[in-house]
Image (cartoon, rainbow over all chains, first blue to last red; front, top):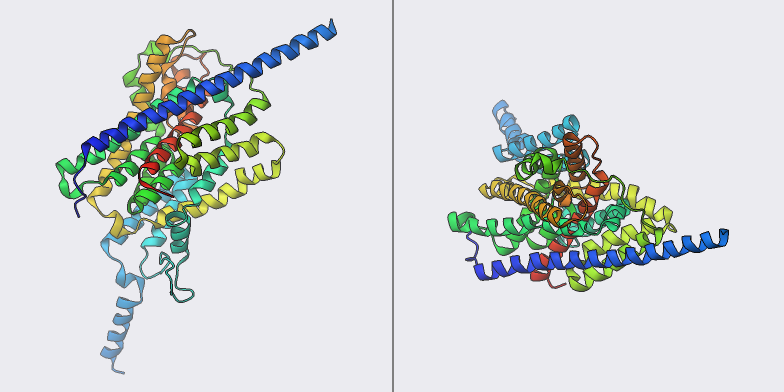
Length: 56
Length: 397
């Protein structure tokens, strides 16, 4: 049985949308993870500095 | 009873009730293919946890008159449904719960630290999904050349998703969009995952120079705190599912399993997800995949096209990852080995290992494994997002 004729406009819209969505989500995750890392690393650095001060 | 009548009776039984009498060439071929899978799993150790039960399922499903693949129907007499039919109907076609629980186990097994320590790897995981969309278009183009063998939009989505090199995502997406080709797409995904060591190195070599492959990267990534590892699955789950709700069954379960692992307070549950649960589900899922390939469904010229397009998706995904890696290396302040892009396909951890070995082959000081694990686990998320996107186009839960 032959499938219905392909709507190439729709097919390219699907491809464009798919590539865009994957890159958008992965970019947002990269930004969120970077921010999260910076916050936690700054907190760790503060903790270490405070511990050094107490020792001193 | 005369001697002739006795023989006629025996022949009748042979023809109607005995398996040999009902064994035809397509079934024999499928049984041989199943035996081939079992041989590869045992002798070559190619994805044995997948290929061995898939091969066994194929053989059982293609032995005539067993009734093993009879699916339960309303009004069916008790005991008439076969065990493989029950797995197929409730595990893969109607409820599709098995791939989600595999993802749950994978999440519990996955350490996202290399990705959290190097968030740029998310982009490599995204780039490697390009193969999915290329093969989607390729599958649709088949109809232009051979109209009788053309694929529908839903089938093209299912074929493209093979390029993610992610078994559970392929099974889940195909189970909902094009269940008729699920066995082939799933087998292709797992087979290509098993052949990463054969498929990826020539593509990487083709697209990179020796100098690029030799690029040295410091082996250590920054340490990741427990709080970050706990927050990551929660933040990622909310962000992805709020944008692509249909990815929830895969992404949600993957990250839920990871939260169990990283929380550190439900060790027994995490251990169960990593061991007993994923093992039980693997047995059921892989037997089901094997059973979804009866000869009448597989003995079709389109099967070869699916296998070819799946392979093309995997190759293009690898190539796109490497090319994106090359672009990133131009903008990176620190030395960046573009081969890492090839690990963006979600064949975990095989792709990362290949990149690591190739890195060491070109520069013995290089130790790229942890760097490559980042894009590798990002690829798992990327392919699940791509699968969720396809489902969102056609499925209304």
